[in-house]
Picture: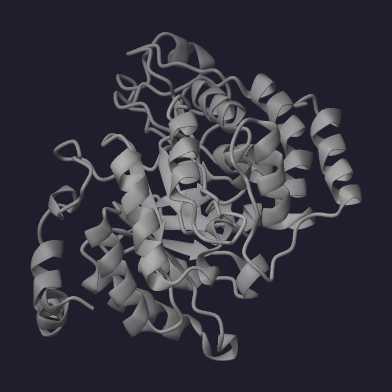
Length: 389
């Protein structure tokens, strides 16, 4: 740890209290924020793979090449050192160098989320501070899980609270039970959502009921939910709410008015309260013509975006614009390829698929092994059958 960081450790609780008294946009973020607004996580984030050379060293040249290719895709930002970045296999210094490399290449209007979760609270704080110094805008903190039997809601709330108190950048919770065998309990999420430096959660469990409850029960908090997989991206977005600022409302979701009232823009004049949840359709406010529906989930962190970033951004756009039928058709074509590069073949499958679409995949670090020829053929057939190859 740098000398300045060690000296600052005893002062962190006091400094944190002063930081959280100020608006979140003033907390020293490397990406400038719009005054009066928090960081907006709305959009698609690919969790980048870490490219390795044939000798399993981090290949920064290939990383920069992939970043150049991703620059033309309208991602909201990038995630580095998540599960797909082989985070556990990188040394601490390698992790920081990867973040620095990506930060240098990334436009300032795109967010950089960096994985910083470790098994102990102390190590997580140290890594989170280092990630901020390396240029990360947001820390993505996975649940500690080695002693999962002791990871009660109270223990996890204490862990994340201490990390968020000490972090110079906002924190996003990360629940990925497929890798940790530990689902961050809903009651812990709801408690942590009230912390001013916890921005949201990436939930990779795929339980739509749980995601819906998180969206619903944190609707009064400054808290954003990110779908952790392309397989349930549309379903997560479909947990939407009315968002018309003029309160004129939208046809089909007014508890106290008629469809004609909505069409004529009389919702406000009639004293009709604006409901928070509504039927999802292509509905616009007759008063101001704004879209009446915002997604339930704010965005998605999707492994498949390393391969099919453009289509996933298109799916995001269709959901926001109310093009639900077209979005549904597109979602159906993404499910099987997504399963193939996640649950079925994992990171080796993801890296192999990247090569078919013009990106550098390369090898994984041992003990992960490459796909067999039959697995490669099965993977290719999955993409072909859904019209991507």
